[in-house]
Image (cartoon, rainbow, N blue to C red; front, side, top):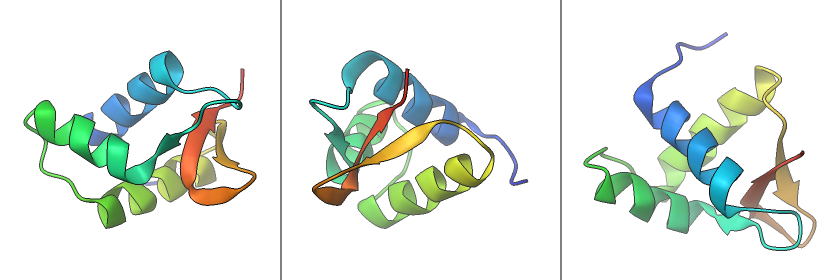
Length: 74
């Protein structure tokens, strides 16, 4: 399991509060949000971090029509 860091925490927080299956959030939007929080990030990093979270059993789901959009299964 990868180390849990602030970037992962903010990704989970954003997805929990701002995303749903009907309105998933793009990796680019997540990267922009993280930059606003003074956390260095780009879209590739978000994709890597979400994959790490998914492999750690965090219920992050990919949108059906776009694998670069995410939501948390509730």
